[in-house]
Every structure is written in structure tokens, then in C-alpha cells.
Length: 246
Ligand SMILES: [Mn+2]
Image (tube, rainbow, N blue to C red; front, side, top):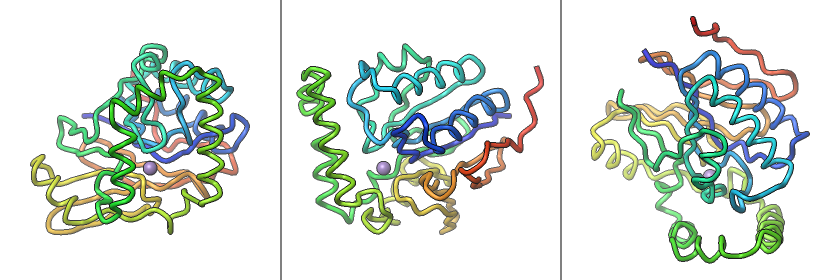
């Protein structure tokens, strides 16, 4: 009997933002209620390396370290935080899962961007960002250099409205189907597209997490029962789960 919580696309930037406050409340509360919390990518708007000393990086480290004392926390790389590395994992206690990741009870977890195959320009960029050579080059720069690069990329992303749903292509259903068949599972959970919903097709189920914009989104798993839910970011997070029995 596994209880899990899945989140993605928080795009955390500021420690004083409602998004970060709700995330903190949720993590500190739910780590006592579930066995595992899975962060399925784009937890932060940008990660420039595990040595980042920005407020949000420190605050995030604190929250995750605390949560890891009570439950298992897994991180998957999104297209904005693919530089989370082993130092961050060691510091906090989180485990970094590969994308896709298949749970032992047959859920296929993915950030989702790998299946947006209709956007060929995006896939070319993705291949570059995920290459060892590009990552080694970036991580070889000094922290101040990476901070400057991060600021530039953030400004560019804002100017282009990169996080707006209309500017993110949806997944390709045939690619999803092929991946589910390859992994021999029928249920997938992903984020990235900022199009929350549940899709049923040919005996498969796909849960899509939403971005934390107008509200927060999560999928809750209680053994074989899955539920997609949203909650207000304007007031403190209230769990619907009972505390785990000691
Ligand atoms: Mn994404």
C-alpha cells in the first residue's frame, strides 16, 4: 500500500511568493502523510548549479531536507531544472529519478517534454541542453557567470512568454502510446504542458499535472486510486489526508 503525491511545474523563483509558501506548507505537512513525494520537473524556474547561494536555492534545500526526514522525496529533471545534481541530492536527501521512471506498481512518471515531438525546434534545443558537453561547459563557468547567464535566460523567457500554455506544444498522443506499450504499463503521470487534465484512450490513463499559476496542482495516489486535485494559492495549504499511523 503506497501513498504518493506528485507535483510539477511550480517554477519557483521567490521565497516570498504565494507559490513557494504553499509549496513549503504542502511539503512539511504531506511528508508526514504519504510514503513518497515525486517532483516531476520544473520545480524551479531555473537551476544554475548545486552551489547556487540564492535565497530560493537555500530555502528549497531547507524544505526538502526537512521533508526527507519523514518520507522519500524524488526529483525528476524538467526543462528548466535539469542541472539539479548529486550534490543537491546529497545535501537534501532527495533521490534524482531518470525520465521516464516506472514505479514498481506500474505508473510511468515523466516530465513530459520528451513527448512533445511535434515541436522539432524544441526537441533540438532539448538535445543540446541535455548533452554532457553543454552541461559540462555551463557548470565549468564560475557561479557569478552562471548567475548572469541565468538572469539573461529568465529575462528572455519572460519576454517570450515561454511559460504560457499557448507557447508550449502539447504531447504527441502516438508517442505517449508507444512509450506506455514499451514500458508495459497503462498509466502515466506527467506535467510540462500546463494543460491539467485526465485523458483516457485505448485502455490507457494519462494524468496531466498543472502549473502552479492560478492554483496549485497535485496528483494523490492511495494504492490503486489516483486523484488529480487543485487548491488555492491564496490561503494556507490544508491537507485532506490523515496523518500516517506511526
Ligand atoms: Mn517543462
